[in-house]
Image (cartoon, rainbow, N blue to C red; front, top):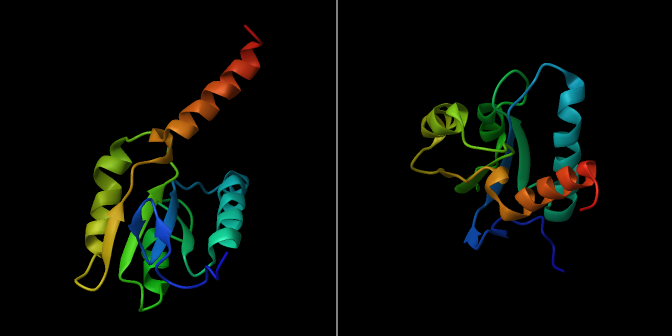
Length: 135
């Protein structure tokens, strides 16, 4: 497989220069561990130049912090919410953040939350079934 440290990695059948994994946020440092672990795994596979981790509130780095540190070559950006469902934050707060960060030079697309993905739903069903026992 080629060097994935370059811009323009193909994601979700679209070309993005960078993707930001967006978690909700919490002041509890233990709460952040699963998100940081996921980020570390993803960045090892796709390259630290192609993916970042941000938090919507209550901890850092914020979405604004991450966007401010992006390379000037980044022109298309996707935000992938690590949320289970669309709620107030994804209907109002995150789109407002994205609108304030978007410029003529930087286009930002908000992707559906991971909880909308069929694989995540299947995984949750498997975990519930595991706790309930075999049928």
